[in-house]
Length: 303
Image (cartoon, rainbow, N blue to C red; front, side):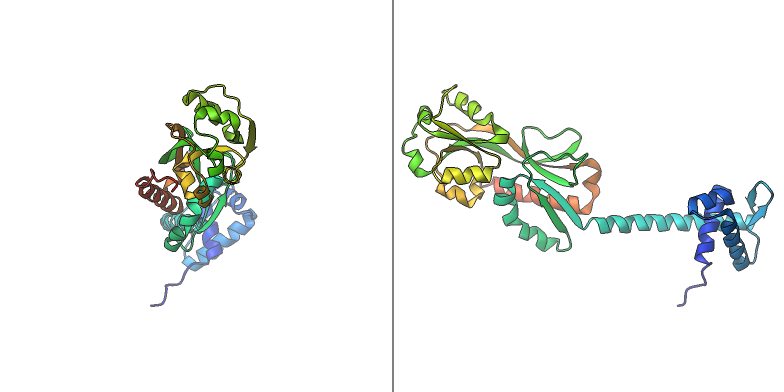
C-alpha cells in the first residue's frame, strides 16, 4: 500500500515550533532561522493544507481551529519521533561497555571467562581499564567497576561477588626456611603499594606484631608481586580465592598453617541510573552468576 502524501517536512517543523511557542520569532530562534523564513514555511504548509493555520496581527499570531487541531496531532507525532530517536540513540550507544577492574582480577579471573560472555553478546564491544585505583564514576569514562574493598562506595549500586582472605604464599624453596610466622624475620616480605597495611595487620593477627623482616619488596600490581614470589624473591600475602585462578599460583605454597585474615570483598558496582541499560545489566548478571559458581570451589588451594 502506498503511504498518504506527507506535508512538506521543513514546513511541518516550522509550523510545529510556531504552534508550540505561539510565536514566529521564538520559533525562528529555536530553529536557527529568520522569522521571515518561518513565515514562509508556514504559508507553504497552509497552501498544502488548503486552509489558514494562523491568524496574524502586527504583534501576535494565533492558531485557527483547523490549525489548533492539526498542531495537536503534529505535536504528538514529533514527541513520538523524539522518543523513538532517544531509544535508537541509547541502543546505539549501548554497544560499548567500559569496565574498570584490577589487574589480578582481570588477568586471572575475568579474561579467561570473557569468551563465554562475548559468545552471548557478540555485538557488545568491551573496553577494560586495569588501572590500580578506584574508578571515579563522576569523572571517569567507565560504566562498570569491579573492586576489592571492604565496603562499596555510597551512592552506587553494588553486588558482592565473593569475600577475600589474605594468607602468606611463597616458592617451595623459601618455605623450607619459613616454617612459623616468627621465621618471617629471616625472609623478604613482598608488599602491594596500594595495601601497605596488609602485612602489619597479618603479623599482629599471627601473634608477631612489630616483626622486622630481613628485607622488603613493593610492587604496584598483584601480578608483578606474584611473579616475584614465584621466583623466590620473598613471601607475599595472597588474596584467596582469587589468587588460585592465576596460573603462576601453581608455583606457590603456603609455608605454614595459620588462620587467614579478612581482606575485603570483590564488588561489582555501577551508577544507579545505568541499572536499566541492557549492556550493564547483562554484564552484571553474568559476572554475578560466574561468581556464584566459583564460590562452590572457593576453598580450592594449591596442589
